[in-house]
Image 1 (cartoon, helix red, strand yellow):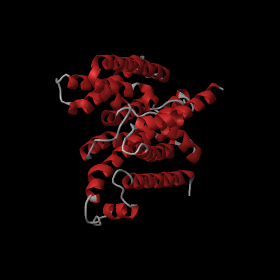
Image 2 (spheres, one colour):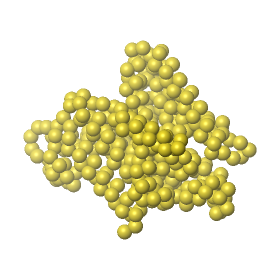
Image 3 (tube, helix red, strand yellow):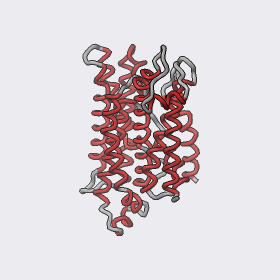
Image 4 (spheres, helix red, strand yellow):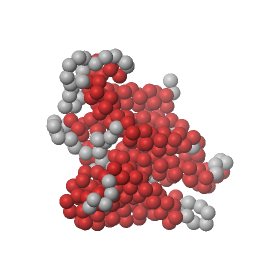
Length: 332
């Protein structure tokens, strides 16, 4: 078995185990054997609480949402690191997440004033993420081309503007500031199958586009000139790759807030296992990212007993030190 197939199988097993763990633990513990029996068409054990309702109405949608968001971040991070030839690149480098956060914060502020319904938060986040992506494109576009350095710098600038906007909203929000901070920290709770469907519509086609451009990503590791020498239409490939990452991350941010470091950590771990060929790196990073976020969310909602942490806090606690290690190695 090749390293790629082995890595994909290992990531799939990890996702299955993380999903089983997430389905079994919580305020209503369910034995793993009963979880499997219910999921594969068996009857739940009689008597309250109804384990079938707990699984299908609460835990399985949360697991599916976490898997989709983790796949978007993991696969997107692998693609961006190849595109920018930079090990510190991740889906948040384009400023998309900050734009989505600003859009959500504005809607939450208006909801607090009674001007709009809180259910519009995902739409506000998605619009903000899309606006950030278009702003980065407009700033970086030079003579019919998208220079990668210009895209990277534009993304940083747009991200800083988005963060400043969120800070301003927090000052204005006063009583609603807690809700905005909670959303900004990232949370998978409170969503059902409808939200899972919307995120899947954004994430799955985007990941398919990234996998389809694996050869172009491999060629870009040689630089733009080297990729063009191999027959790759670099300009077109960058359009597709950046657009796909923007769509995937925008869909994830719209419903789950800002969840950092999955797109940074997972591709590096996967690269050590399967190598640098994007044909395997992108899909394995997507599956491994799904497993990592499902596991992190399980820790977040069970670590403090009855209290639940935002999953972004857990990923930040793990990812922050990892980022510092990568930064130190890059400086060397």
